[in-house]
Length: 139
Image (cartoon, one colour):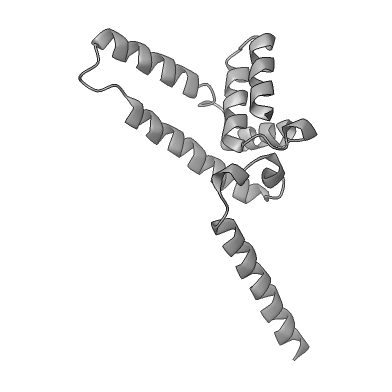
């Protein structure tokens, strides 16, 4: 009888925590949230985030009403900036985020914003630019 109660209680806790995650709003996905996730969930989240970034890039491509010169500049700038982390594994990004969120000042930075910051860091943006960006992300 006691083991049945324990199993039922464990199942209830799992269902309630899954329901809470499903109702979570996007603005709640920050460093504090990130640190509660296990490795597998982090990798799945990042896979979806990066796939979503690519899909967004496809939707953002300039249409026929934009001049070819303008379209080429937009494509080059967007894909150059977004592909900085292309050669980095999802696991490496998760490790970099773990390190980024070790700083308590970064605990309220949204995960996608942190990934953007890491991409700018990897692209070689100068220290002053990165400092301004990080200050803005922490607000």
